[in-house]
Image (tube, rainbow, N blue to C red; front, side):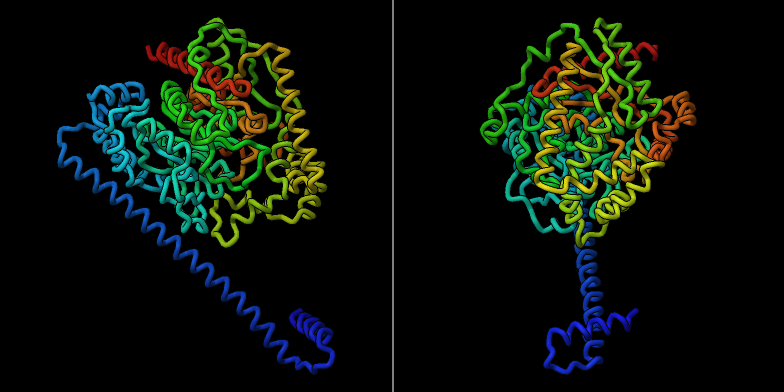
Length: 596
C-alpha cells in the first residue's frame, strides 16, 4: 500500500515537472517528512490544549481559594452572622429583609459564597468566582434600591460578565474575555442584584448533559450517580443544592427546563426576544430553527416571577431596543379566573417514564378539582416536527458549524456519541438511514435529518414549513379555546453517561422552542417505588435502542423530583407564570395533606 502511494506521488510530480528528473528517494523522503510533520503538529497542538486546560484549572482553583479567603475574613469581622436563617429564606422574604435593613447585602452575599463553595465541592457546578461583586456591593448602597436589592445571583457560563470568557466549555475561547457585561447582567445590576458566580454548562451547549473538558461533569444535588441535566445544569444544580437563590440560564431546546426538572427547581423559558440575548454565546450563530432564549432558575415560583418583574423594565428596553417594550402585566398574573387547560401525557415520539406520566395525570386531577376545565390535546404531526423542523432545522448545514466548534478540542465523553453522528459524511448518514429504515425507522429518520436541508432553496422551505406548522398548532389550540397546556417534562434525572446519548429525548421541550411559545417546569412529585416497578415493563413506542437507553437512563430513581411543563401562547409569559404558580400551589397543598 505504502509503495503504491509513493508510485502515485512520483507520477504526480513527474506530471507537474516533465522536464525534471525526479529521484524516487527524494519523493519518499518528502512523504515521510510530511507525515512526520503532521504527527508532530498534532502532538504540539494537543500539548498546547493540555497546557491551557491545566492553566484554566489552576485559575479556577485560585478563584475558589479567593472565595474561601473572602468568607474567612468576613466571618472574622462579623462573628454574629448566622448562615441558616439567611439560607432558609425564600427570595420574597429575603428581599424584604434586605430592603428594610434587617439583613445586609454583605452578610447575605458571603453566606451564599460559602454555601456555593460547599455545593460545588460536592457536585462541581461553579466555574468562575466573580470578584467584581465588591464593586457592585458599593453600587447597591446608593439611595435607589431596585427590586433585587442585595440579592446574590448566579449566571450561566455562556452569558457575558465583563472580563470573563464565554467558553461554552471550549478551550479555544479561554483567551477571549468579554469586553462588557451582557444586557441581562447589566439589568440585574441596575435592579440591585449582585452576580457572584458563573455556572457550568455542557461542552458546546447543544446537549442535555452538563460536562466538558474545561470544568468537568456536574452532578445531581440529590443523587451523585445522576446528571444535573443540561445545558444550564450548573445553574439548576447550584440552585437545587441551596448555593444560589436565583440564577440565569439559556434554553435552545431544553437547556433550562430539563436540568430544572432533574434538580427539582422551577425554570422558565420566555418567548424568544421577550428578554435580551445580547452578550450570550451560542454554538451556532444565526440558527433560528429553535429559538435561543434567556430565562430564570429558582427554588419557587414567587422567585421566578419577581425576577421576571425585575428584568422587564425600562433599563432592558433602553439597552436593547430590539426587545419589545412590554413591562410585566400584573393584572394577567394576578387573575383568578378559571382556566381552560389542554393536556397530554405522551407525545407519541418518546414514551414518557411512568413518573412523568403520573405527574401529569395527578396534576390534571388537582386542577380539575380546583375548578379549571381540562381538555385532552394532541400536538399535531409530532414526527414531522421532530425530524423535519427541529433536527433538520438545527442541522441545516449538515452540522458543519457545530462540528467546527470542536476542531482542536478534546471532546468530553458527554459529547462523544452525539458528535460521532454529526461528523458522519452525509453519504454514510443516508446509507445507514436506508438500511435501518425497516428495523429502526425513528433512528433512520434522525440520520436523514442530520444531513441538513441541502440548499438555500430548501432552507427557505424549512422556514416556511415551520411557520405553517406553528399556524396549524395555534389553530388546534384556538379551536379548543385553550388558555394554556399541561404536558410532561423529561425526567427523572438520568444516570451518568446517558444524557449525551439521548438528546433526541427532548421532544417534550424542544417542541416549544420551534414554536417559540413560553414554557416552564414546576416540580410536583417524586419517583415512587410503584413507578420504579412499572418501569420494568417499559417498552417505548419503537422498541429500538433509544427506547432501551431511555429505560436504563431513568432506573434507580426512587425519591428523585419529577416536574410537569406548563405552556402558553407567544408573549403570554404572565399567563404561563400564573398557571405555573397555580400548579405549584396545588401540588404543595396535596403534599402537605399527605404529610398530615
